[in-house]
Amino acid sequence: MADDEPRPARPPDPGRPRAGALRPSRALLVLAVAAAVVVTLVAVTAGGDGEEAAPPRGAGATGSTTTTAPGPPAPDPGEGAARPLGTVTASDDGTTCLPGAARCVAFSVACPGLSTDAVGELDVRPAAQARGVVVLFTGSNGGRWWADEGRGDLDYFAGLGRDCLTTVQVRWKRGSWLDAAPGEEAGTAAVACRPATVIRWVHDEVYTPLGLTPTPLTCGFCVTGNSGGASQVTYPLAYYGLEEILDVVVATAGPPHAALAAGCLRRPGEEALWYDENTANGRIDDSFGFAPGTGPCARRDASYVDRWRAESIDTGGNDYYYPDTLVQFFFGTRDETGAVPHGQTYVDALRAAGSPHVATEVLEGVPHSLNADALTRVRAILERR
Image (cartoon, rainbow, N blue to C red):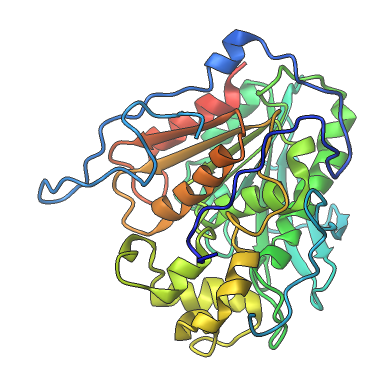
């Protein structure tokens, strides 16, 4: 099969065994809640010189429609079996959280097949009478706080708290969630064990003690991330079985780790998906243990296609059918990166698999980083009851 062909659709089977810790079934959904998933796309126009831009591939005029490589890849757990998570070691010894954090948690995470642990901090702000928990990831290597990366000041988090949502910002330190050790051809799906494991830890240590029973398709336990952060919140669905604990996933400006082969090979006719030099060197090849400029993505090495397919979020995962999870995507008309078409490729995979609660919205005038309008829309999804 060519590297850019869509993944064959798997007939939806809500009764099949699923990996991960099971929670009570939420299959009986109120029609009004299901109807709220559908959103309307605004007209798509690019900024600058009045030049009109085409909408993301697969996006329609009415919005959310229920749409042999070098180096051994990580062991394939088989269809329907999630990759194993790692372990988190945590303490309330963090030192660089933002002012007003109730807890500043320092953590390290060890994952199978990775020789180095990743470290970071969690900025935790509990809400009074919490009805849900939101975990927030930033883009690129995840080295900044969500509130510091042009995503809104601390008043944004205070507002979520007033709406009874506890917030947990994740910041990676000393390297990145994306980095494999030099010479260790781990791959993007393997290093995504790190954010997946942190999400599971926050669920077990922060959310579960609240003893909540959320309304289906609302927070609950939910996650959001922009750009590389969108990859951090969607790899856990496709590879690590976390659909069982995630009520709502909000991905903005991504995930950019879909269609890896098209991004790296830079073939004519696929220009919208081409990775630039910085992305190839520092965001893709780093996860395979290569120094900048020496890796297969930077070299456009066609012999690596099968490996990229195994690691690409839209083709290599074990699960794309999420019957009880709302997956909301936001794309901006002024996003000049390839994140929109890459993200839409993952949307297409979810719809082809029959996931019933997939929504996309194109936001007029929004760049790759979120502006005030985008923050308002994200908050509306998180706060929806």
